[in-house]
Image (tube, rainbow, N blue to C red; front, side, top):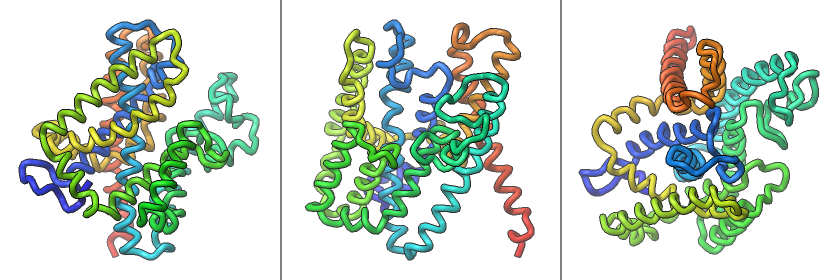
Length: 361
């Protein structure tokens, strides 16, 4: 990863690649939360057929690498932030940009969960919002359990990464401190050791990896040149396809007790493949991703409420369960409308901010 941009004029710049990857990776995150998803296919009792294989490969194997790569990108960019701003400014800025949106969208979904629980629907049994309990606070702040809006735990973990940024940056600066810490975090993630307070310890490892890439760009130059060769890139792509195929098939075997470990190992290769592919995105796909990119954060914040709303509307208007009939149409409709709604929300918010009194002074 080189934020100065690639030397080859036929490839996309680093800033373009990051801008395109954000909506693409968040789209993958969406596939793991949509109703009827096959995230963790090893835990789902599904028959092996073409449709289930493709669905499991997308949401159960490929999509697992979305948050790791987003964490690497965040860590890589964080070093420049640390060099430019003081620590107090960074923490205050990230609290405004990460925690306030997290609280708002957690509260929004929390009110929905409260209404459903009050109506006798047993959703989110891990959070007791009705009658009121301490789970309101824990669910809002993502303390010791998943938040009301489950994927927003990532924002909480990312905020803690920035709180720890001086320590992580110091560790990343020297290989003799970075490598042992990376190995420790990898072991903890593979063995699900989260120290109770941390919800996803691997996020800290990938954030640290991004810091390492930023610190040691020159030292990693030979590796970057090796990866720039087309033959070596095709080797990476072939290895990725083989890994996805075998891991997906493994999930459908009668015995797959090591699937979680294999899934974690696969996240070491997948972010690299996504980064390599992003250099060659062209045409309408590039323009679409760049168009969606400004709405990426809104899409991440809002996709679970939007998917819930779409599911309720679909079942109410069609009088049938989309998980049993016409699932592909429901899947495409939900993901498309969620993306369009996120774009609309983002543009509306920007217009409101520009029209606010303080924005005119």
